[in-house]
Length: 313
Image (cartoon, rainbow, N blue to C red; front, side):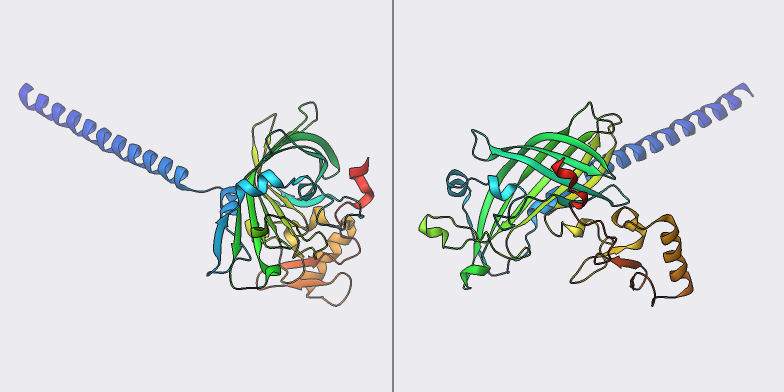
């Protein structure tokens, strides 16, 4: 009887450890797979700097980093006076912040080239919902490629990519660090083979220079990280796919619009009531897609970039 009970007990012990072994093995495999997947995934900033718009499939590519970075000072191109006409005042850049795509504006007060010609020291200000924080940091330009083919010169492109890190003052409440990838798309006016670099300073906004900053903001206090994108004119919307519902012009998705328009609480309530009643003929023009509603930035109460000239204070 004792032998039988002992055998029974040993069987259950063996079964228990077998289950533990299988469970631990599965957990290890899951952990290893998760880590591998995490390391295999690219961040938005990496995707942004690796993908190139305005480039055609048959274009040839030439690395012009050494020549370009040694001969050309990108101070004006990185500052907010470019690609505006040179006599125009500098303006902030528009951006989105966090999962709710709140409006943020970024302004560079000073940009200077360091001893390393690929490094630029930056001072500036951020404005999130009226809270202004000063920051300092650096932009590092890593690589420049010339894309060309059997086309007119004015549609050739130079793609410059790099990284940035801007740290807001720790003494400021709710301050943090902006960090990510920068990409600049610009137009040479003369063939770069002539060993001369001239960019089109007076090109239209969409065809002159596209500067896009894609990355994150990390809180000094909590280390919490949030998505943050910003840039001149229309920033990289592809990383906020349902934010802009417009095709040629910006139409901001209604569910993110609160920090982008100066409607009063009463007016917001009326807008939602209009949608509920299917009334799209009065008041602000509501755009409708298959599943979302949006408001055009041409509405008078749109908070256009640099409103109230906060960046000059």
